[in-house]
Length: 251
Image (cartoon, rainbow, N blue to C red):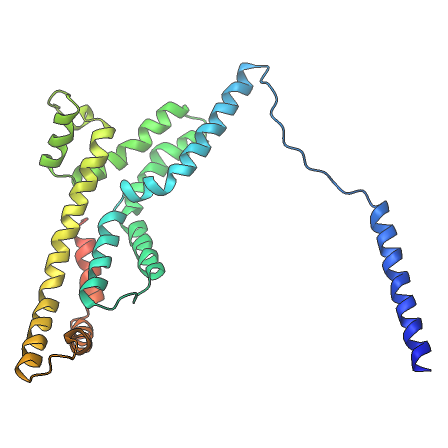
């Protein structure tokens, strides 16, 4: 009886699978084809070039975000904080990068808002051409970089390029401004990193001296100093101080 019931169930299942297979075979499957055709009109060539330019900009977007904004200084300083605390991977890289990104958005919000109002919005409304929109969009970003670039760093790249001494900021090329801005940001970040390291180095020296005086040479000083570093950082509200110092530097 059970064997007959089992055989009946197997036969029913096979029939259902066969019917579904036949139904799927009768249903047309859509196909997707991607091809490259030759452009027949100048308008099609212009559209193709615009698409190529857009893809190029999107591929360079991370580098543009990192190199022309406050992201470089912020992420370097946050990395110095983690290294000074000797907490290895705490906070993890995802947290530091996320915090650096949101702080970058906060710092760059006025600049990007000016780009939107002066360049993007008129371009989308059809009031200005694409070339003028790009020129207007570059001006607020260049102004931001000029405010935080040291003259010595800028003079280095202008001199190496063989260009003449600029009379006003408009004479400085963007290809010289961007690397000068980057090394200026790195110098500011390393200066803040030095200030961050000083109190934690003092704690390490005190702990190491105490352990040596007690004859506990086999005990790693980092293991003892780590809780005191974290306690000091929490007591002085370290994350608030670091974030405030970073934001005040861009005022």
